[in-house]
Length: 459
Image (tube, rainbow, N blue to C red; front, side, top):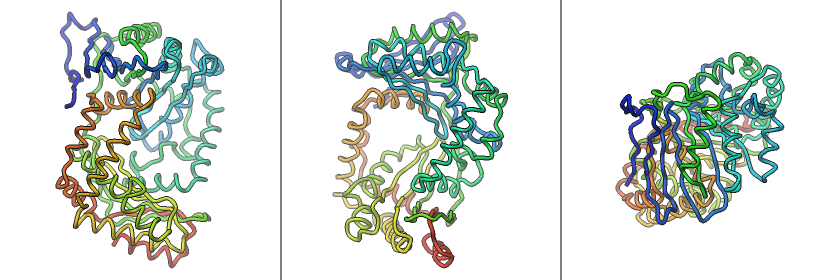
C-alpha cells in the first residue's frame, strides 16, 4: 500500500505558513526504514529514510529540471549547469568543495537526466553536517563565472566526444531521436557541440535562477540519520543563503500530461566504422505513472532482463550472434519507451533483428508462459531488494519518488505489488506495447544494400 504525503497543491492556513510541516510517510520497524517528510516555509521538501544499523549517510538534492525543459538553443544547459555548480560559490572555491569531501573520505557527484538533476554526497554518518553544508552551498550560492563557463566548456565537449566514441551508448541517444524527433525528449542530455559552444554565462545564470528555486527542489537523505537534525541543518543552510524568502511558497507539482508518439516504422542509421553494429528496436512504452508499469516490468524481465530471458537465450545462448542483448523500459511523466538492444557483427545484423522481431511478435500474440512470468516476478523482486542495499540507492529512491510521484512506497509494498502481477496483466500489456509497429536505430559500418534492408525489420 502506498503511503501518500500531503498534496503539493494544498496550501496551509496563514497561521501555519511560517511553520514546517512534518509527516511520517512510512513507519519502519524499530526505527529502521522510517521515511519522514518535511515541507519548509518557502516550499523546500526534505525526505529522509533512517537506517540506524549503518555507519554511512547519503545526502542529495534533486532539482525538478532536465533536458526536456530546454529550448533548442539551450540544449545541454542543464548538464552544463550541473558541471558549473562544482566550480565554486561565494564561500568556497572549486578546490574547497572537492577538498572538503576528500578530507573525510566522502564521495561526491551529480547526474543529469531528461526530467531531473541530482547532486549528492556519501559520507560517514558523523560527517553528514559537512556534506549538508557543502551541497546546500553549491545549490544556493553558485557564482557561475564567465571564466568557469569557458573552462568547463572544454570538459563538456570532451564528454560529448567520449560518448560519441562509445556506439553502444550513443545508439540510445539515436533511438530517443528516432522515437521523439526534434523535441526536448529526443535531444541528447549533453547537448551538441554547436549548442554547447553557443551557451553563455548569462544564459546559464538565467536558467539557474529560473529552475533552482526551493519550490523546484527536493532534499533526500538516507542512512544513520536523524530527521529533525537534517531538517534543522538544511533549513539553516538555505536561510543563510537567503533562499527561503517567500514563506507562503509551495512545492511545484510532479510533471503530468499526455504525449502521443507517432513514430511507427521509423529507421535511423548512423554510419560509423565500428567493429559491431549496435541496434535498438523498440516502440512507445508506458508513462511512469501508468498502473500497468508493474506488469511491464515483469514482461521486460522475462523478455530481456537476464540470462534466462527469451532474447538472451535465443540470440546469444542458442546462436551466439551477440555478446550483449537485452530489453529495457524508460518511463517519463507522460510517455515511455520500450527497447531491445543488441551488439553484433554487421554481417549478422539482419538475422539478429529478425530473431528479436519474431520474439516480440510472438509474445505480443501469444504472451508468456506462467513459468516464465513466475520466474520473472521472483527475479524482479530479488533485484529490487538487492538494488537497495546501500544508502545511495535508498536516497535515490526516496528523492526520485518525492520529485516524480509526490509519494513514497515502502520496499515491502513494492515487493507485494510486483507479486500481485497476474499472467493476464502481463499478457495484456504485452499486446498493448509489443503489438505496436516498432522503430529502429542502428550505428555501424553497414553498406548501402544492408542499410536499405533495415526497413524490413519494422515493416
